[in-house]
Image (cartoon, rainbow, N blue to C red):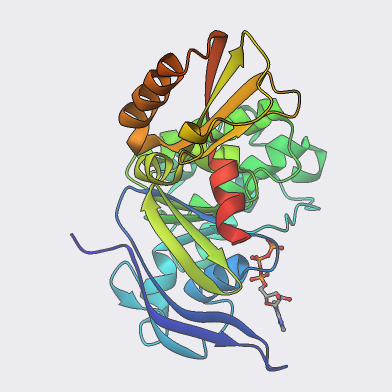
Amino acid sequence: MQPDISVKHLNKIYEDGFQALKDVNLEIYPGEIFALLGPNGAGKTTLISIICGIVNKSDGEVKAAGHDIVKQYRKAREAIGLVPQELNTDSFETVWDAVSFSRGLFGKAPKPAHIEKVLKDLSLWDKRNNRIMSLSGGMKRRVMIAKALSHEPRILFLDEPTAGVDVELRRDMWEMVRKLRENGTTIILTTHYIEEAEEMADRIGVIRQGEIILVEDKNRLMSKLGKKELRLQLQQKLDKLPGELTLEPIELSEDGYELIYTFDSQQQQAGVARLLRTLGDLDIEYRDLQTRESSLEEIFVGLVHE
Ligand SMILES: Nc1ncnc2c1ncn2[C@@H]1O[C@H](COP(=O)(O)OP(=O)(O)OP(=O)(O)O)[C@@H](O)[C@H]1O
């Protein structure tokens, strides 16, 4: 399958000499939801801006929908809708006019039926005659998405789509993004909210200091890098960890009443079974046990701070 976005050996050095992207390689396929994660200043916006033709690359090759973003600028740009981080919504225009106008900017002939569909999909139809400045923050965000979809792009970039929005609206946005994907749109989003990536993404890319350090299917990432923790509450206090247990990644709590065993999700069964057998052999009794899985957040923090 031909990727919708293809980035090869991309570098970006800003005029002041700062290298914001270092040999970035990335492919994103039709119909995916791809989440780009990275700490502040990692290069997420720079990467998106280059793909969308807003910032010039230093070198490398970037294609959108099979079109080179420099040599076939128009075609590449036409395939992309961008919802930027900064919302520009002080407009006196009505929702309908603003969204229709955006379509015109791409040189596309008016298509009221499409604008109507976009507004309905985004629950903006009732507001079509309202001025944008009179809308709530959440509605304004939807207008930004409607504008980005006005020219029927197959790829949608969302830069921090839910920054600063409340939990309810965030859930609404997630629902909406899923609906767009069902209609065949490829979606690339950057986010600080790991929960957002965990909830929505099919694949996750992690960028740190301008380098893509990992691209992985979300579920595989969680099972590959996720850790599990087993906590055992002991019947009797232990003064120190018995020698038989020191080979395992196991700790004794300060008060001596709890054993904490951390293991990779993949080695789960063998390790836990062995541990429980050893405890039995040593006559160490426990009265309760709990397990906990690490979240994507913990995996992410581990990755970017390595
Ligand atoms: N025009 C510019 N000139 C010089 N350096 C820049 C310019 N724009 C961005 N940078 C630097 O490039 C790096 C990457 O910035 P970028 O905005 O791409 O990061 P980001 O991952 O999107 O961060 P955030 O999550 O904070 O939005 C930062 O160190 C930033 O200061």
